[in-house]
Image 1 (tube, rainbow, N blue to C red):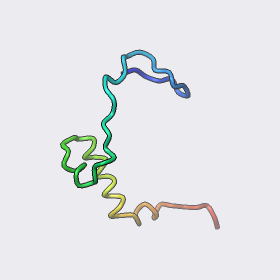
Image 2 (spheres, rainbow, N blue to C red):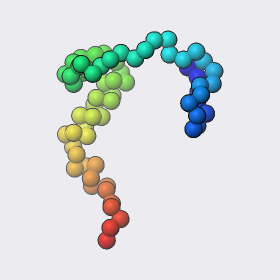
Image 3 (cartoon, rainbow, N blue to C red):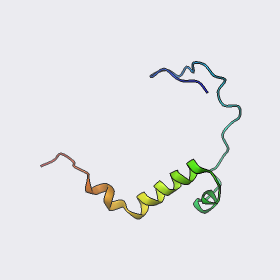
Image 4 (cartoon, one colour):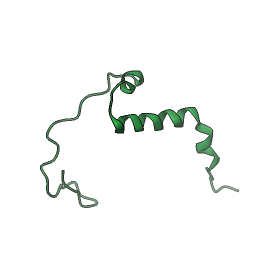
Length: 66
């Protein structure tokens, strides 16, 4: 996998991804949780955390309006 200079779509070095990404649009959250993948598990855990504790996100919000 190569790197991209900031602001360009050009990939420098590397051959890129060998295959396309799988279509996960037909899977529900329960099916995704059943897939054994560490990154996917971490992303889903973060999503669940944000849904179950939404007020914690807003506690640090400051609109700047007085």
